[in-house]
Amino acid sequence: MPGPTPNVDDGDAPSDDPVSDRESSDSGVRIDMISGARMQGLTSMEKIRLILDGVRDGNIVILEEGLSPDEESKLIEVTMTEISPDDFTGIEIETYPKAEANDQSFLDKLMGRESAQKLTVIGPANRIETLHKDENLISTLVSRK
Image (tube, rainbow, N blue to C red; front, side, top):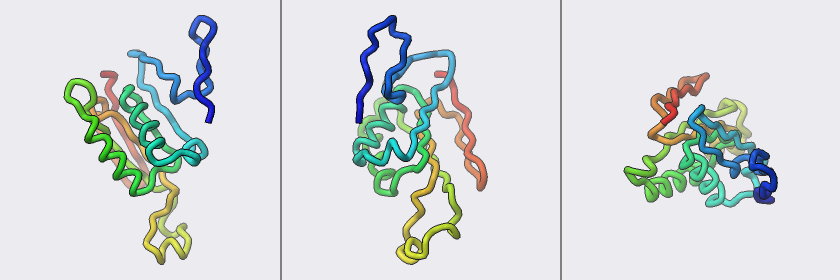
């Protein structure tokens, strides 16, 4: 996995890795949409670090394929250890299944496994004012800080 490339010009050129290319901007809310292909080669802890680093920077992180239940539990566990009132207030997380239960394979249904096809939205708890989920929509109101 290639890392960010150093900028040799005036600093306006983005790196090859948009998630690592953080900009602190008060003009809006940054949303990092991370593909399933990007997450596929990462270990659970690498995924968690990628997510938490983005959220700690004040970004909303959207995962195309979501996390496994074990990875979500570990994300919450790691988040709890990093909370500090002055620096990091935690995360809001909402997962929305992309496919109905009817689309799961017979083996997945038989074994009681959830489909991995899901969309996950994660953001900083101090910036997300409302996070609503219904059967067809995830909606959030995000403050600028």
